[in-house]
Image (cartoon, rainbow, N blue to C red; front, side):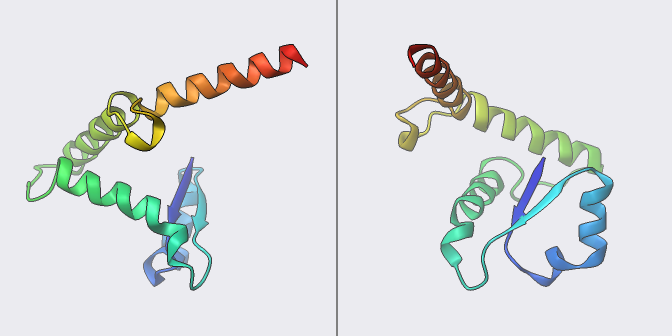
Length: 107
């Protein structure tokens, strides 16, 4: 799993980087001074905040994590994305993989 972020001090800190390693995650950061690198990630976080947990209080950290995971599952498997031809990201990926396999078989 990859955690993409900007180059904020909280994400660059040894504590945060060690936490990622503890979960066997890799860190990915935008290029210095290039705000466009992080635009898709910022858009996702913005949609998540407005879509589900914004303004809610959770009794436990687990409850908050479950809510985020439920939303990400919806976002990736069911939400239609106009930039992907009005299919979900998972459906888009499935089609892309099928096309790649067909291209290999045709070659």
